[in-house]
Structure formats: structure tokens, C-alpha cells
Length: 159
Length: 412
Image (cartoon, rainbow over all chains, first blue to last red; front, side, top):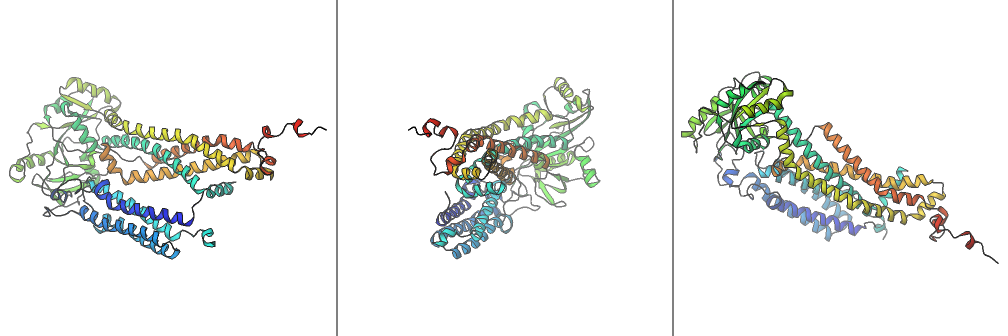
């Protein structure tokens, strides 16, 4: 048994849709951020050993913003998967692959560089959400790379 | 031969992919369980060597709290009378005894999460003070603190505990244990902090003058540590003695269930996959009888055919083993702190050498499973007679399928 082009495309689209869904739900349900864990924001925001008194009581903490931003990224990954189903051509597949690589990188950058998570080493968002999002980002990037570099099935082209 | 094996594997991506995943799963289950056990044990030994203590004497009624502080850094406040220090010091075989006082911080509205404050006596201490001399060439000053590696904070910056201002003087290296989430300061400063807490903190810290939390003991002869521990238990009432062995067995008991589940998963995976892999290999060998027959007709020996079929399974198992080990190692590195928090164990991944040895053993075991599963199919394929399978597939594959001599010679 071997994969033909449409089977492979279907599988990759499915993988992208699942990855997108996981990027959305992970910070809220699978590896919840401090906010979803029920830690009050005025305490969670102080879960860093800052040098001065934290006056941000009542505001959304870093990991909350990260989780919200990842909803948008996850939705775009799902959209990329659906687009792959609708446009199975070689050029569109490569274009979608490029976009997915970018989305995967952004998935990693949001909790690590762009927004971040709580700084306390034992905060739930740091020990659970952060590594999970890094893993999902890396898997998304690998899927994107595969979409860009995978060759067309010669049998399918011959047809 | 290698090229032929690679081509055969690549020609059946789905079946071989499934086998590859199966081997990777077996390897990952075996590897994770044993790395967890080795990591937790190494972590406890690392912690005690960092403390420089052969024995830790704790209040008997707070044994579990003491273990939680030492192993996981779960903040706790508990005391016994300072007289214990002098009693322990008088036990024969004890070289040095140093008191420590444990104070859990408040979940304050600013500045810090819950951390364990460990106050020590600089005159008696043999744990933090030598480290300070080694790294900073000076003792800990007034209102200075040393942070565990797991706590965020810049050296030279200030932080507050119970409303008292402290300066961060240094940060310890990671140990994978409770020390990583502890703050060390002088006992004298802790007393001042407690005194001031009545006016400057949300909650007053009660720190009785003649109370301490633990006594760290260095014995004269480390080989006699167990005997000294026994003598302390006998001669000092109301205390419990923690030794590296007792802490390791506590962790081992905590990890036992997890490791058993992982080993059982690997065993079930092996038991299910072994016959499955054998059947798949047998099916593959049967499907390729004509190809094998041609190879035999071209001069391939039985040994070559046997090696070919066995080699395919061995390569798949070997690659699956490598993938399983790498993926599980990546997972362990990424989720190390999450595992520590969920299982409630200290964990410092073993050193590179020990990790490489565990990885190699796992890969070899996985490869051996792959080889064992394909011995019968490989032997079956090697017995194939070339003329039987090449000639229009009449089903003549071995000696027993040949017509008997009497049937072959027509009688007129």
C-alpha cells in the first residue's frame, strides 16, 4: 500500500487542522495557563520575583495574553489546512507550506519572545503551556517544510 | 545488501511506517521509565552533596514536610527546640552540626510567589558558606540572600520577604530538587525580618527565639553514617533522621508506580507487537516469494535471503528505537518541570554518559526484539526453492511441495 497524492494531501490537511485546534485549546484545557488554573490575576501577575512592588493587580497576566494570541494563530493554521483541501495544486501547496512555516515559528515566538509567560519557574504556564506550545510550533513548522519540499507523485503527474 | 534492504523498506511505506512507530513506542516506554528513576535518584544524591550533609535531623512529627522541602521545595514552616542541636553534637561520630530554620513566605500581593526561606547560622554552617567563599570569596552580608536556580531575580537587585528588604547576592546551580526553589539567608537577618513583620508584613512571622527546623550533620567517618544515624535516633528524643538512602527510597517508592506502569506498557507493547511483527514479516516474505526466488536463482544463498529479511526488521527496529529515544528525550527535556510537579519527585536528568548508556541499551533491546520477531519469517523465506516460485507460481516453495518421484514418472 502506498499513498497517492490526494491521500497525502488529505492527511497533511488533517494534520494541520488538528495542530491548529491543539494550538487553540492547549493553553486553556490541556496544559492550562495560570488564569485558566484559577490563580487570581493579581497573584499570578506577582508570580515573578520582581524587585519592585507589582501594581498590575486585576490585569490579565502575560500568559493570558499569550493564550489569546495563540487562538488567532491556531485559527490561521486551521484555515491553512482547509485551504489545502480546497486548493490541492502544487503551487498553492507550496504557498500554504510557506505560510504554515511562518505560523509555526510565530507559535513558538509568542510564548518565548513576543509576549512570554509568567517568570516564576514553577508557574503552571511556564512548566506546562510553554513547552507544549513550543512542541506544537515545531510540529507545525515541520509540516510546513514538508508541504514545501515534498515532491509530486510521478504517477499522479503522468495522469 | 544494505541498498536492497533500504529499497524494500521504502517500497512499503505504510506497513513499514506502522512497524517503525511500534518499535519507537516500545523504545520510548522503556527509556522514559528508566531515565525518570535514574534522574530522581541522581537528583537526591546531588542535593545531599550540595548540602554537604551526611545526615539531616528533622522533627519527628514533621518528617513528610521536611522531605517535601528537601525533595520538591514545597514551602513549609516548622520548628523544634534548639537544644536538639547540642544533643546531636554530643553524639559520638558527629563531626559537625549546623542548624537551619525553615520559613515559608506569604502569598503576598507583591514581589514573590511562595518560596522556602532557609536561614542558616554562618558560624556553624558548612553548606552555603563554603560555596560563597568558593564563588564570591566573601561571606553573606547583612540582608543579603542566595537564590536557588529555579527562582528569577538578578544578582544585585532587591526583593522583599515579610516586608523586609533583601539584596540578591548570588544564585546556586540547578540541582533538580527543593533547593532550586529556596532562598538562603543568615539566621540573624531572619530574626530581624520576623521582628519587623509585625509592622511591615500582611501577616506577622512568629519565629521563637530558641527554635530551629533542622540540624545538618557531617559525620567523622562517612562509612559509619548509618551507625551515627541510629545513635542519633536512639539518643535524641522526638527527632527523625534523614539519610541519602532514606530519601532515595522515599523517591523510589513515589516513582515505583509510574515506572511499573511504563514498564508494563512496554511489556504489553512487546507482547502484542512481537507476534504482530512476526506475522507482518511472514506476510511480506510470502508476498515476495517470486522476488526471493529470482534472487536465489541469481545465486543468492539461503544465508543471504535470511539476512535480507532479518536485516529489514533489524533496521526498522533500530531506527524506531533511535526515534523513540530521541522523541522521549525531547519530551523529557521540554516537560521536565511539568513531570516534577505532577509526579511530586525531584528530577535532574542523568549526566550525558549515563543518558547515552541508557539510550544505547534501549536501542539494542528494541533491535533485539525486532530481530527475534523476524527469525521465523526469515528462516521460512530462506527455505524457498527458486524453481518452484519463479516458474509460474505453482506453489512449489519447499521440498515438501514437490511431487513424489512415483507421480512424476508416468507409467505406461
